[in-house]
Length: 460
Image (cartoon, rainbow, N blue to C red; front, side, top):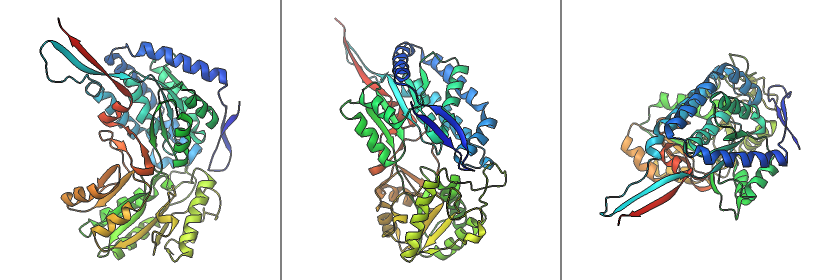
């Protein structure tokens, strides 16, 4: 066994140490999940609804403890109040729509036959959750998987290892059947062995492109289905007819919230030439208002990045961009907590950028954004599509028809108009290109967690 450590980005202290599960414990958990799932699949949907609703209620009672706990584990300021508002919205929505989403599909009537398609559970679902929004990303899969009649094995990220324990406690409070949900502390090798053994029927993974490739490689040949939400380089386009103040305010937040460590955070912005100078001026002014510091301080609006390694990636991108001619607008003197190394990283805004720079093409997952001037919609779309990723794209305009039309040309999973960095549980959460495969949330999300079974019954 290997110890899994959570080291706080606040001060480098050890927050938690948990031994990884032994081979025997993993085998026992998988066997228990398989057995529990067979019984759970027979439980009426109304009873599943009651259990999962009780789980959500139990999780919400932990909010006061979880907010500082998350700050200590990965650095998000307590000022922003944690993840449970979005957690509740997603969980309750997926519970609410389950009866319709899981209902049999019945073709038109045919005399002498009963024909229908049932949506049956896949079996055992492995959820590999990330650290940046550990509750929100896990709930996307955990609640609908259980509602659909599956068992769930949760692997929490090392950086937020306590999250899995919170899930397990709430499941116990809700009275979930023994073995149906298990929080397992796993190494990467353990996860790969589970997948390569064919012991689970589906895996939902949120993480890096490299991590997604490792998941695919481990599952190769098992025919285990996969849901992969991977990297992103989400763009925004501010058209000439945009509400300038609204665009500035929301895009600053979209770029820097959670220190830029958001799956759908804004990493590059294209602004119509008629608004460009005023947009940059407003964006820089608002960025300077952030306070970088200890996330447990109620006045802190920008906490440390989760790891020094992640912060160094951002530093390297900024350094390369400046060396190639980009202009950095934020003075380091405004953010004394950033010592030039470590986890505390100031926000940065760069202009004079182009797509020869890593900053504009590769994910940085940090508090930096590049802003480019464009002459028209066609140039903006070309640049937005010049990326190996495609999770979300945000268009800022007063013309809804134009936003929809441009959205059809943009290679992305979600098109926003006049907002960004948000996940609506009624819509399909999905990506294109290297951002991944599969869908979570919405009615379509249930299709990823079930299989079709046809009934063709003839009356004699």
